[in-house]
Amino acid sequence: MIIRYALCSRSVSILRRSTKVNLPLVTRAQQHSKRTAIVTADGQFSYQDLLGLSGRIATRLLDGADDLREARVAFLVPPGFEYVATQWGIWRAGGIAVPLCVSHPRPELEYVATNSDASIVVAHPSFEALLRPIAEDHRLRFILTCDPPLSDVVQLPQVEISRRALILYTSGTTGKPKGVVTAHANIQAQVTSLVEAWEWTAGDRILHVLPLHHIHGIVNVLTCALWAGAECHMMDKFDADLVWDRICAGNLTLFMAVPTIYAKLIASWEKAASARQMAISKGCAGMRLMVSGSAALPVQVLQRWQTISGHLLLERYGMTEIGMALSNPLYGQRRAGYVGVPLPQVDVRLVDESGAPVAAETPGEIQVKGPGVFWEYWRKPDATAKAFQDGWFCTGDLAVVEQDCYRILGRISVDIIKTGGYKVSALEIEEVLRTHPDIQECAVVGVADLEWGERVCGALVLKSGCNLALEPLRNWAKARLAAYKVPTRILTVEELPRNAMGKVTKPAVVQLFGSKST
Ligand code: AMP
Image (cartoon, rainbow, N blue to C red; front, side, top):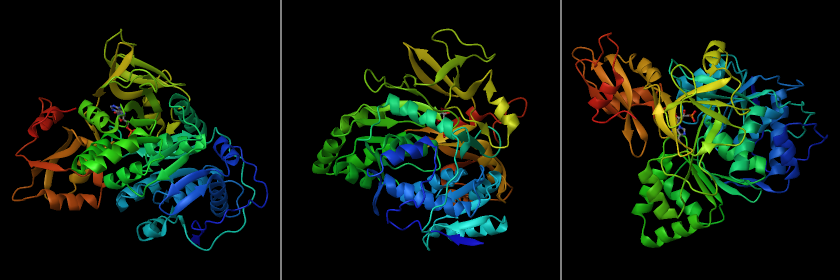
């Protein structure tokens, strides 16, 4: 069944009957109704526009039912007003939003749609060819974000904030990505913590250049802006020159990105003519805060950025499962190489291998507790239980506190790679590479890189008589894995380094690539 709804209509919708909503995010939007919420290349959209369109989408999703009752709705919509209205429409209909990634190939999309057990798939027409076959193969209701418009809005359900809201897929140390489920209350705690710490107000205008299937783009940028009644200026995708154009145009107050984006912006600035460099610096000077996170910020990048923009980047630490946990201060000293102190509503402790809190200045695993911590891994009760110790979420990251500030030391597992801000599982990539007809064995590692944080690198043992070059392998892998998971360097080896037990020694594999593991 194909159902179409109009997301494209710009007309300000008047809700025919007063809809009884109790999601605070929505109630707050009603108070900001005339203010601008979203700005895109297509124009400006007010909070009233957002309420109108999301109400119509909710009505379409409900299709006569009174409440979606936490049905999963997978959606693939490019960054922009339609994306936001679809996400809100799912929430207002009582569903769980499962955002899909615009750059994922079919196997990744199909995995998320089926693993989350979605019953509805919403697609922008540009993704119809990719998604409709998935919906048909799995008998899912398929909705396109185009004509004809819905004119009426039904009574929407009351959605308690204790209900599940969002599933984001994240890589772990075992197997395929897991669905991290957060309730509205978790998201609200994550948002209010950041709104307080970074003093978001309705006067803020943030430039959004981050992916919209990841916590950084969804919570830290989009939802914080909408909670505050601020403006979120969305770009279709990250493009360094266009970001600088937008910053030069002035009037932005906030920017948040991953270290790789800052490195790319620096490279673009360095190539620019001096008049443009001065205009960029002027644009940055008018902003009040620039934040980096999702991966370690190299001190060289922080220093170079300060020269260019005049801003000492505020580095924070967080994770899909917990929201943001640690942050350098808005006011006061921001220490290069450190991620500050716990954010409001977040408790953090460091523990040793036995789970006991460590002594002062001693490294330990970061554990986190608080209302922002996720609800569960979707349909994985064992993995959920294993992720907690006495109510504390075990992050798998190591840190030390020095002069009252946290410094991240790295991850406990070498099988988690952070590349360009994306968290990827070496094991998941190895599993796919092993299905290549020329590959007998392989080991995937992250190799330190100033621009990407880590690069995905693969050591390959080929089947006898086979040859495999990087580009053909990348093309083959891109049809099966998200592009950021595909190795950018490969080495063909006779055999993989192993320890006495026969287990592949990943640090030795990293050394094959001429660098140390991070
Ligand atoms: P994700 O769930 O994709 O946001 O990835 C979370 C992981 O990113 C954390 O567990 C850390 O390993 C890493 N991470 C996030 N922020 C930082 C940071 N400021 N410094 C170092 N690693 C970070």
